[in-house]
Amino acid sequence: MSRRAVILAGGLGTRLRPFTLTIPKPLVPIGSRPVLDIVIQQLAAEGFEHITLAISAHTRLIRAFFGDGKDWNVNIDYSLEDQPLSTMGPLKLIGDLPENFLVMNGDILTDLAFDEFYRRHAAAERLFTIASHRREQSIDYGVLHSEEGRLVRFEEKPKVPFEVSMGIYMLNRRVLSFIPEGVPFGFDDLMRLLMLRGEPVFVEPYGGYWKDIGRPDDYESAVADNEAVPERFT
Image (tube, rainbow, N blue to C red; front, side, top):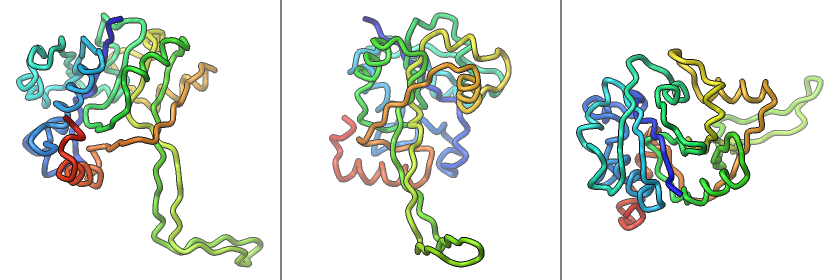
């Protein structure tokens, strides 16, 4: 079964400045290779034969780098947004999406098995599946718990666990009917609308490797990981 992926690669990358002042965020290097190069190689190895890169005017350098995808043994085409459409809005510009397709941010490093993620979603006939990851947020204060003005519990700089989206999703084509045309429409907008309409959204926790390269801490960590274990991303 032919698999299709849409990679969202039109973001400004403001959190990674000054790295992104001259190059788009998906082209920032991990070792000697752009992060998006690694992502496309992973998808190609897992049977994704057609990849659409959703780009904007300021990310046309991405098109020059990847061309038609023949160097990666995949078919790469492009969807250009003339105005910012956020994360889900660009999908309305792509007219030939199949029944099920992968959507992901172009600045994600992970060892998630994309093919298995695809198969589980399609086999269960889901509308939308989110890959999630557990993280911790450090609170840099002493946290007070009080009742009626009296301290009952105290925590010194606790770490709060939470579940986050990995920026990797599987969608059924029916989702497109919930996305308006020509206006910014984000992942958050779509999730609120689907829950409001009573549409099921599934979450698959993943405990393996995941870095959001758009975050400076994650980018520095990924670079260090690559130096320590260069074969991780080959």
